[in-house]
Length: 249
Image (spheres, rainbow, N blue to C red):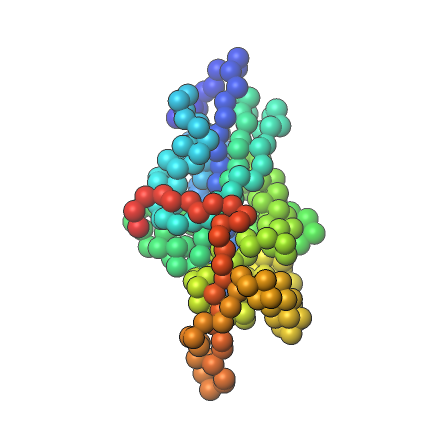
């Protein structure tokens, strides 16, 4: 589809940066392109917006096709408008950030004929490095279009927002029953650096518990021979985005 574009038209696509925490690391979903341009290259899930579609309609259809699970957090990331970003013609991309709890990622990867696979992200000062499931490194030039720039923008946006919004809680397996150590793992994976446990705990409790948005549950998490971990619940109220509802699970 759209191997040849009308040079007199401007086209608009949607691209999805779907992120999750996997084995303690930030990961994203990529697929290999079957068609030119960039056949065989890794790319973010993407789709052209139809003449009678909104961007949200196109994202919904793309999610149904490539990441068909429900209840995912989504927000619009950025609009990429560079004139030469697609060799076929003038194409603008509206990129969306999607966050997946670990059980949703597991659900996607168990589906038959799913085109996307998880790739680990190594955060740093420059382009976030990527690794495949076999540990193979992936460079910026291994990606189709300007998807390296989209990934970098999304990771930097996430890192910038995790300290002042609720976005990090959407990575949790269950925001209604989680330990602070589980939440710390999320923050460390996103920021790419270890955090002091005492300072992290103090900061989270000061920010959320004292405002009445986070409280202890009656549940505990057993951790081997050690003292069971207290489980917390967060009142998200979708303050920093919206929960995406795609098809049935």
